[in-house]
Image (cartoon, rainbow, N blue to C red; front, side, top):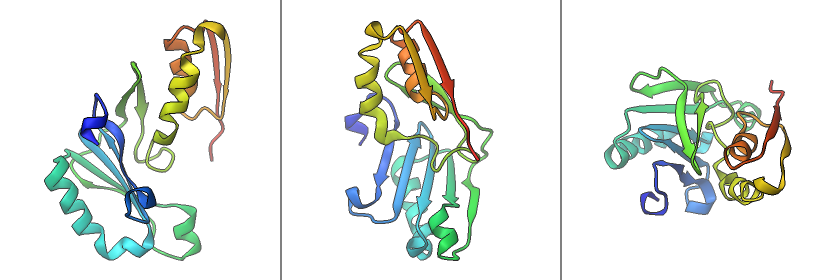
Length: 160
């Protein structure tokens, strides 16, 4: 994936799409956030060891706190496995910067699967002077719209 992105901010492993069902790994520079289903619990440490060997992250965070794990009655974890996490982590995408809390934020921290959608919309910013970003989380769409030229952006989010 390093060859596909100018900076180290991307989804490193995307579950079934990468032939690794139940495993999502997001990269934020030298921080990794790992989300593994209960079926991979016995492989968690070998997976982390492999990530350390290949990526050499300073911080590895495990997020095993999804509703699916609760339904399965699997153990819930949200913790730093390696390094010292001072949060939030920086994320850069399409020229804009974001602050992502990998321990308290949504899932693995960012909706990387919307990267192309955010850029497609941002390219329309000059035609959209006023933007309302509802369910904004950390403002992925709204901040990018402002960065690309929308004059007035309002981001609204409500999380539980």
